[in-house]
Image (tube, rainbow, N blue to C red; front, side, top):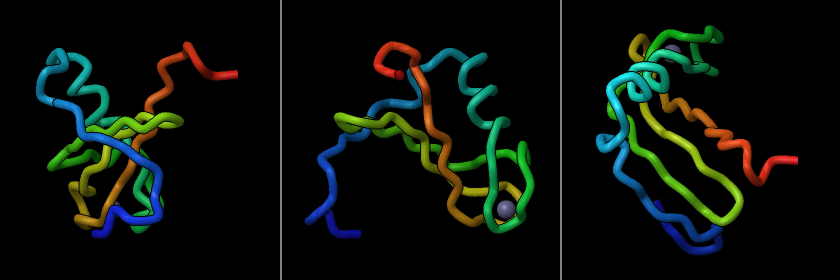
Length: 77
Ligand SMILES: [Zn+2]
């Protein structure tokens, strides 16, 4: 994956979240491949950029990439 021509972002430590938050984020997913929600996510990685905050992982069922956007509620219209 090349980082050229994309917005600047950085990885943050997903594992430092509380167990409760981790469980929530890992269970509340949407998989495009399966077309189903809440199938679960494995191998989570959390990222932030200027405009967005999200978690990337893989679907527990089909292992396709799944992305969960995090809405913190502060800079949202
Ligand atoms: Zn899937």
